[in-house]
Image 1: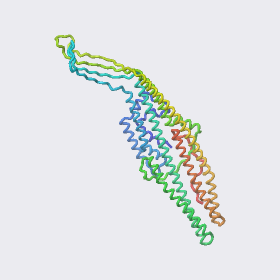
Image 2: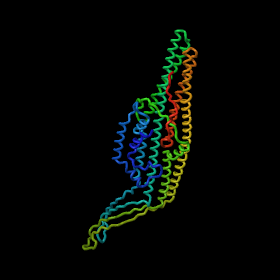
Image 3: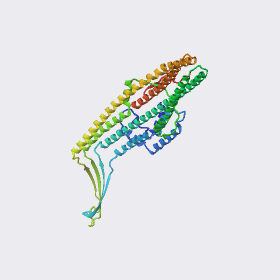
Image 4: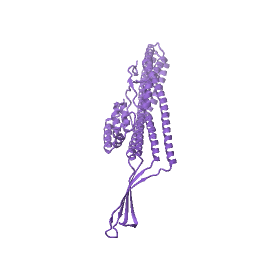
Length: 473
């Protein structure tokens, strides 16, 4: 399903196309950090805009549009995803900021009362100084910013997966609604045909007036149910439009056919994939790494900072003629060390970093437990829907067709009761709607599982099931 989305993903992430963030594990290396931070240039931004504009021209949400088209459209237009992408890009811009040295200082001094020296009066003083943090401090700050950028990237991936699930879920709900309307309309038409037959038979005395009334009642009940189904189209369409960033009252065509896919992996394999690939867990792991590095950075506060400076003093000519060195400007080099005196403050900084690291580790453990429990629930619901699909399509619907055919034949020959025929028709409709609901639920659970795992779960087509299309006797 996601093959079409590869182009869209490239468009969304063109600014970081050389990013090692796509790797399954590991943090940025120093050179990779620099290339990734420098990738978001005006040229790459324009290239992304051009590529996005080209894709917008390609994607059309018309009758021919399939689910991948809706996912691609949402990836290009959803503001929540754009915001997450912008936060990732903002985090990348921290790297060149934190790895830079502090700004050098320039000091100018004017002697209000000139200092007379042997070689002449001192008139002005200029100082240029540069502060250097303790060895390794800047690298640690860069590594911390890189870990934060990786966490922002994983959070962006989590938003994207959540968006794709919401689009698929709304799309499948609309599919179920469309099939429900279609099947209910077919049943109304069949009952209307039977009502006309009952009227004709009643006129010649071959049927009771009560049969005509019962059919009319059943037709009114189904017609009212059909109106309720048609009224649901607007809120479901608004829900899908919201994910696509379209006006909520914009019209969308009914979904076409949906695939029948089944999982092609064991529960243990999927749960292992979840713990390894889930972007929320990966983001929390990056935060743990960030706090580990922050602890090392906090310990750098125990060491002094060094400031290297150069002073130049403008000196006038000496009053005494022929004085050696008259008017020479002295140049002074200096080295200043800060004095890390307040150890209680530095100790508190280390304890703070350790506590935050412990909190991040506990947050990840709690998130993993919650996600694994949710995955177990999703797997149960998938298996339940998968069982129902096979039950309805392979067993119950064929038998309901046979029952309806038998009831119709018996009624038309005068050997069957009308209520038996109506019950058979109602039962077939119930089974058909339940089958469509189960087919959609199976795909919805697969979509939710993709969101939890962090990638499309292994699956295979299910060619063993029969169609749910109604066969009118």
